[in-house]
Image (cartoon, rainbow, N blue to C red; front, side):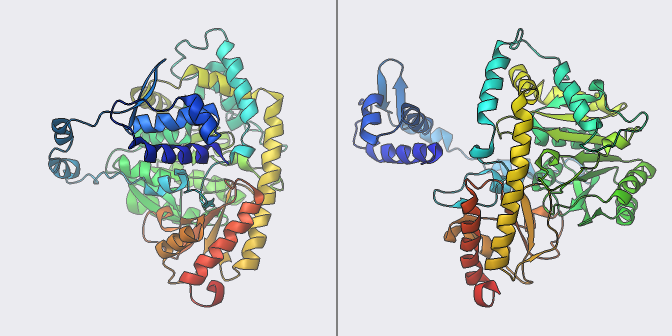
Length: 498
């Protein structure tokens, strides 16, 4: 049983028993709970911590755990005051020409929340624990903690050695015989260390566009970026994506029509379509942006998620841009662990100082022990082995899901098979109710992501994003598709949704 499930189950059992005790009465000792429930000491400790957070239990160090006193009546009344005034305050718009600011994280939380017990996860965005380099991370963190000065305040821009590593990754060869052109190499001084990719995206959006401004986005695109843009008061304007990436002519039209000065793209294994920007379109995209006087935010989230059969990867757009058009976003989180929130922004010119200032105002700096641990990890021999293991496993999982879909759900259409990333973008029959299908899938025991949150405007067709990385075991992918077939038979017309 997974520890997350063990903690939740033990907390549920203890929650039912708390009512048997009077307020202030002592609960059984941790040792007694370990023996009674045959759970580990850590599991017991975390279950009790859950009840403490819920206000049901209080702990006294060296004494034990006790049922908490009920809240006083006047305290409860005070916490339930009249908050209706906030509806006006939160919706008030100080200027008629500014876009209303909204914060809708539903498209993100759908892939961050842990599924209910027994539900297979085909909608998450991270590697399962079995594919995360947990031993290497633990060793790296231990070594980092012993480094001289590891707990001192880091440079605001980030630890110099880590900035240098990111610079080489972003501006150097990508695995083939390619080399950066004159003046295009990325230097450590061009890099800021960030608290993961999402933080870097938010910083870049706020630095490059004023509230109320339009920002061009791929359609479909990553819901977390749309949420960050809207939370910053920006207006996402969609530009359609094909298997060969965004069309430069449509991008130019969108710049002219919207007046936007920012385009956010994922040129490599785009989320959710898996598209790779075609070689002949790469320079055209940079040319179009340059002529519009605009920036390109390059979200290179999937470079370390290339499959074993991906071949030579193209360089980053940043490496081909000596003029500062591209602001590059990179993160270590996807390839390691959701908790290693270390990423980077790379940029050239005056915009770098603005990025730096916004990051300092928002979060000061990334904790030094985390930066030192990241540096230890990527410098260890285990790092290259981990990359090879993940590349092979992602290819295997992709093929398993493709075979299962072809066997169980031939009515669903797949326009592009990516050789990188962790997802398939599946086209549903016209008229399909995505909400009804995802709800039916959850009842059948599998979590999938509806396509609607990936679009900045109206969705041209119903889709699902199916992810093959987060499944705990390869067999779960096949079983998850079988459960999806059950949901399709309930919602879609014809046998098995055919």
